[in-house]
Image (spheres, rainbow, N blue to C red):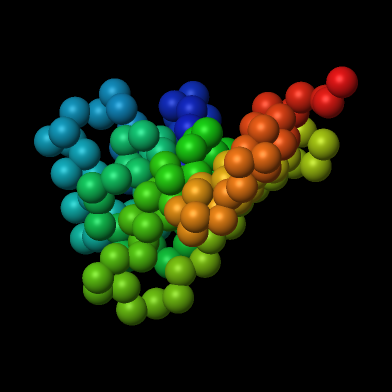
Length: 149
């Protein structure tokens, strides 16, 4: 299962990986066709992978046939990425699921990963009730990458 936040990336991947007969789902794919693409992923032996955008494939699909989830890039929300990953972690999953995030060193994607980690840290602290009033400002500054003056 290959995810990207960007339709142009998924189009390129679909073209480059055509020898694997990928199923393909993005926001521009009609709902009936999406169902056909999921069916293809499950039932067509020549279909070795499914490619799509996080927005279109990230929720509501059961993709337990895949045991690799690859993120070409990430959505801005940790929850969206978690939901996308969970497409392979459903009732009926029998295999170990391997999750791979491709991040180029010293790139915008590396910074996005840092921001996502920081957002998740904030979410965890809020959910656990461990966020202190004084640390809210500090976390917000860190999240927005604002230097203290």
